[in-house]
Each structure stands twice: as structure tokens, then as C-alpha cells.
Length: 136
Image 1: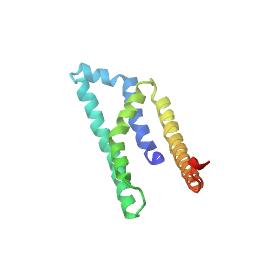
Image 2 (image 1 turned 135 degrees about the horizontal axis):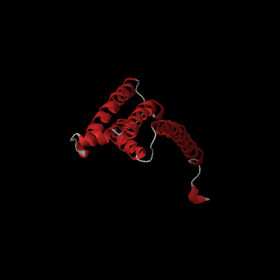
Image 3 (image 1 turned 45 degrees about the horizontal axis):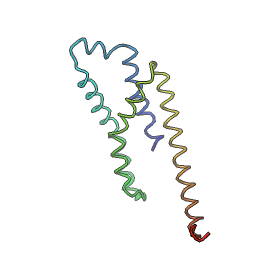
Image 4 (image 1 turned 30 degrees about the vertical axis):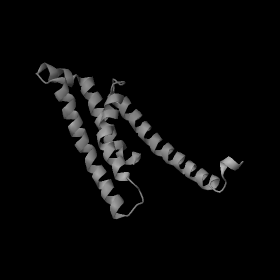
């Protein structure tokens, strides 16, 4: 799932940092926009932007009958949490190119490492399940 969302996340965080680079947020504030309205507008649009592929993934999980107990819950939570994570990341960067590259790295690294860790834990549970550790 991390690979699927890397382009969406990259564009969202890149837009925020680009607005910081160009001073658009300051121009909007001078024009009378409040800071909460600015961030709420970004949050709502980013949640909608995240919801489209998330809904497609949830539908495909059910159509292909993939065993993902409560997977739809994790994907639904991702819709609302991912923008907040990206806003947090955007505070550390001044250039949109840099944040874009680091976002790709973070998402691809996590989409490679987490499945490997789950696989290793599953294998160790299968192998270790034959013996009761308390009897050793």
C-alpha cells in the first residue's frame, strides 16, 4: 500500500512546501484568509484526494476476497492520518524538491521494511509454534 500512495503523498507534501517557497501562504494571510481556514482547506482537500484510491483499494480487497481482517479500518484511518503526517514532515523542509525525494524514500522504505518484518515474524511464529518456549 505504501507504493500505491507514494505519488499522492509526494504531491501533497510538495504542494505545501512549494507554497512556503513562493510565499503563497503569506499572500493569502495578507488578503484576509485566516490560518485555520488555510489548514482546514488543505486538510479537507487532501483527505478527499486520499479517499479516492483508498476506496478503490477497499473495493478491490472485497472483490478479490483478499484475507485482510479489518484492513478497511486501517485504510480508512490512513485517509485522515496521512495528511497530518505530511504536514508534520513539511515543517522540516524549505525546498519542494528535497521534501519530494525524502517522501518517496520514506514511503518506499516503509513499504519494503514493514512487509519483510511481518514475514519474518510470521515465519518465526510458524517455526517457533511447534515448541513451547516455557518448556525450554
